[in-house]
Image (cartoon, rainbow, N blue to C red; front, top):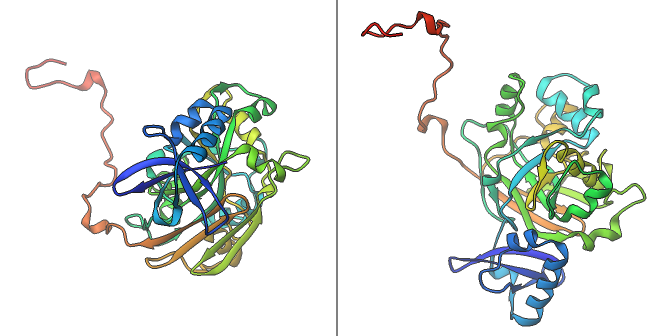
Length: 337
């Protein structure tokens, strides 16, 4: 089953999407019921609610609606599960080759910004100060049940569904930030595309291979030209293993979104830059259109637009070197420490 959140005439509502590609229609959920509510209710209850909606509401062409992110993420964790991507992008960001041995030990992730989610066809603005804007072709898993310290086998029962995930990246900002050693910040803060809909786990069981990977074809295009293609099954960890790792010593909850990390073979421009030794294809600029597709999940397509100019924004000054005084050194004008 495919769930979407849409906007029409200033009203936001959820629904069930049915129909072939290009001919999809949406059956609205009961007034006041959101996709977030269905995720919290669990997969079984959500499918039952979706079936009732299809049987009781009139269809509306999806083309007549604005697609919003299918859910409001409770949190966003973005993993880095594709070895081929790591090889290329490490060279692009740091100038060094190879993959750090620590990468192989566990499925590393960083926390993204759940408030920056945009819809499948929304415009995306270049972040202030960025001159190396990039897309990232990913698939995300959405958690449907609370859990902690899960095994991968247990985590399978906590999967609600999947959606396309474009982790837009300001590579020049990221390169500077990574020198501090805390991971990306403003380089990954501006936008993440989720959509076009949230596909329930049962819909993709046909693609699961013997090792538990979803063997789905992925494609990235810029201005109508295919620049990347890969298989989701080339990831080095399954989604269940990612959920299990995220739950270690922590709690995963309904609505948590976990990105697979960027696919290889052109899943982002930075990987291609690292392999070529130059920015070819060039960074994204206003007017460029990025389309990501995933077998069984649909497609998202966003147009890049100009963002705020860094010179028009309030200045945040560079660090000041402070004298490192201690409490015993501090005396106010009244003589009190």
